[in-house]
Image (tube, rainbow over all chains, first blue to last red; front, top):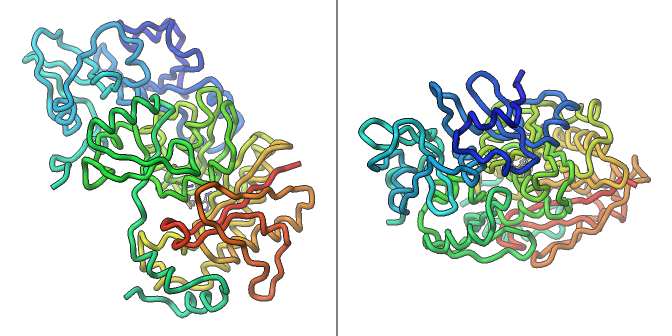
Length: 149
Length: 310
Ligand SMILES: C[S@@+](CC[C@H](N)C(=O)[O-])C[C@H]1O[C@@H](n2cnc3c(N)ncnc32)[C@H](O)[C@@H]1O
């Protein structure tokens, strides 16, 4: 059974999260290391159904002391983060989506969320060498030879 | 040359309104590339602006909100674009976007997609019901449910529930629970053969004959899941009257209280459903349904019925 997280504990997802500004319809549930995000209405409707496989979307996963955000988790929570976000260029974004790390100096190691303007691109692990390695599943990456020609 | 089975040729000879030459010419062409923009996670204007900066040229489809024909794209394979991977777009056939539009899904609705995998129409419903509504996306195949969950995830459908059950039994536990139900039924797929010509070679009359009771049972179960005043849409991507007109006509006989509503979308060519087939006369009400062949719109062939529960 997944456990519904209290609003107070949302901040464990990221210490930068402005919890009170999140849309009131959203609830987070936790099962093992995985956190899903679902609406109240969906959660309530599911209690009347059989054969439920999933509800809402997979938003975050615990990694050591931190949570990293899935692409959707970053898109849902990103606008409410007050730090820990790295802005990238279009070129960097394309490489990131191919699985390549982003070079930045002066970042604390841990988890960073990556965005280009309003578009959040998931999160990555900041290594000691200052690179951010994308934590994006293979099936969400573009191939190396995409583009025309 | 596209090979045709004897049973398909027989079907053609029974369809007075089908122009075989035009049909074969149409299915030789690939389907036009179309996408739906994600308004659940993003603002449509932002997505359009982003895509245009990256070299996309889009033209709105007249019959569906948020649907566009792709005139130009920065990639050869749309499924290998950043826009697809990040859930900004859903790649979907142009006519396949119509059933959900016909269903008239409103913000806040509780909706059921009874045969949902891989999720084109569930994701479309999810963006229309918004955060106050909910979409229950059901399918009977555990393999296809994986693709369904993946696509709902990519779409950011926090307002969705995926269930794995036989849709024929769904009304046992969910009778009267929904305002809107879609039954996009399993069918012989004779309207979408551009994707796979071998369908025409493999086609047997028995496919349609065996599918019909399943389609009827799914429609019946979906109908029972409706609240009074609610709407159900039954759709298939086939041209076989046994899976289309006959299913609806027999349903109306069993349900005199159900009201069939006219489906006449702007911007798409449609044709009158048949009045009879194989010696069976259909209810004159069936005329209100939408039917098109692949060559009518240079897209998929579809059949759509809209029924309101009084
Ligand atoms: C035409 S496809 C649905 C396409 C889907 N609506 C979309 O737009 O992506 C029909 C689906 O019906 C499912 N199906 C077949 N029998 C079923 C049953 N008894 N209950 C529920 N789903 C069933 C199949 O697994 C298949 O995924």
